[in-house]
Image 1 (cartoon, rainbow, N blue to C red):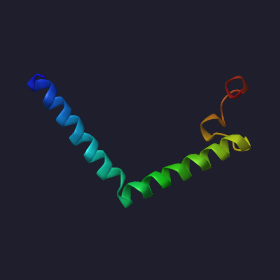
Image 2 (spheres, helix red, strand yellow):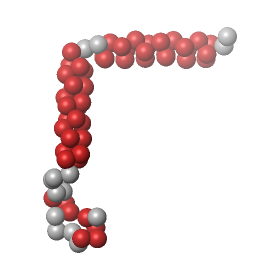
Image 3 (cartoon, helix red, strand yellow):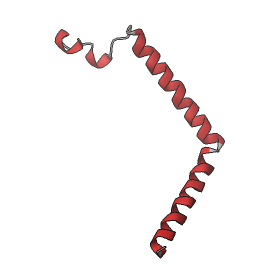
Image 4 (spheres, one colour):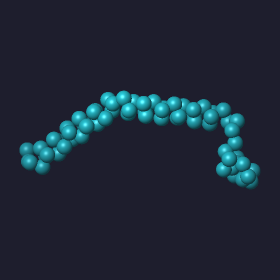
Length: 65
């Protein structure tokens, strides 16, 4: 194996270790949970279809269809 290939393998291993360290933190899990709750709320709002987008409130009817 060439030295370059070995360095690439070591770099990938260090990257994987760093990502595992970040993902296992409590701060990351709180942020991911907040993002999931926000996405769930957004999808619920879109599915309800009751809200009018304020950007389209004054738009012509052809644009809002």
